Image (tube, each protein chain N blue to C red):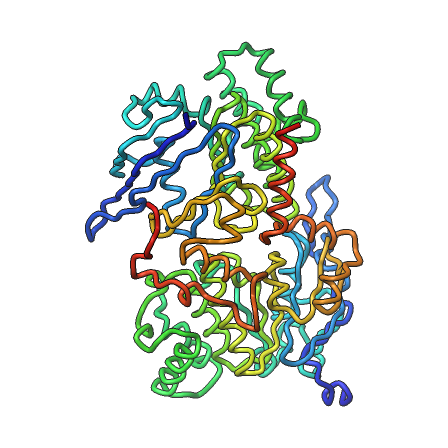
Length: 284
Length: 284
């Protein structure tokens, strides 16, 4: 265990699996869905791992296991050099503080009846002995860090745009000073211009707090921009895993290539090629 | 003569704080056999403009236009019954959420045959044959069997294929696709876009593609209209839009694409373009 602690590894996952059981009926045998079928990776401190795949490939299940929402069926989760006991009731509060999650839909992940100040103060209220004034001060500091302001403290989620809400969700995740942030499609629901702002914010926060990101996305252009390492998942398995440049320049697996081929290209060269193709087709 | 010609279209909604202008003096035209992409972020009025063309806006919306012509016919002031003859037959529309836009209570076969019965008056046998042919055309496997399926028995991509089959059932002259692939995975998106493009080329229909995805624009469009806050920012053919964007907003949008990132931060729209000011030199 000590040798892991010395090294610079923030997160190590060894052969993690998750099965879901569908209950059977009178004549229907029960069915087991292997959502994640043995995934292993390790991630250095301050780096970003992007997990790519289409819906139903198990990437969100993996995120749920990393953040202790779901218990793995088998496999080890080593966070910050410590092997985590994920059985219910065995998780230490310190461990929970180290890992936080930001969800995809900022419209669904904030309680509409809770003021932003309370959203940010609640983790402190539960986990620390800070006074109300201290909680308020910290919430305001965090609001400034994510590009909002103290004037937003007393507002409700419906008063914010999607991008601002995602900032609030990020601020909430950062309140307990986590080391590992799991981002489950954090920009998929956002417009292009807002997406750029949120991605910049994430990069700024990573520099400031030395955060490690697990970034789940289906958008390869975003992944290419943000990731240090990339893992491609397909039907619960990691079919491709390597540094960004390795994966993008030389994809090994058939599915990765299909994925790259399917991604629309917005560069001038490919448009020119397409327009030329269309012209010859219509002339013929 | 253009297939669809819109001059100076304005759509307003009454709100508690006065009239809100969702579409502000937009003009555009589409020719047969042409693919026009309307790009914009959420709230730019790109969908509302097309819903106004279809006559699908609620009566509370105030629609004014100098001209709204389809094949030279006025479609602004036509009666409901006349419009019903036009919509679904000559002009068809595909929506973003394929599963939500099909009726869950009826089989997909019933829903496609309904269109054929009302608009073409085919008898039962002919309807069934045509439905099978259409399903085959959009690439649904086992079309005979598929007709008896309900929407919930199909995946999102398959439902979108059914929607496309219904839309092209009467060989429309104009097809409006409102974010047809936003809810789908990239690999499925590719299939659906390919299908739309091949149908468009084969039937020689006009296609209006409403999207927020610059990648989709680059892959499909002949001509592009960029919209922002209800106003038309720019209109250009696809190559010159990407190569040499005129309006600041388009420049900003293209710079915010992660694949165009230079350095370690993305350019945000606000760096180029201050939304509070009227951008100079836009043709509206």
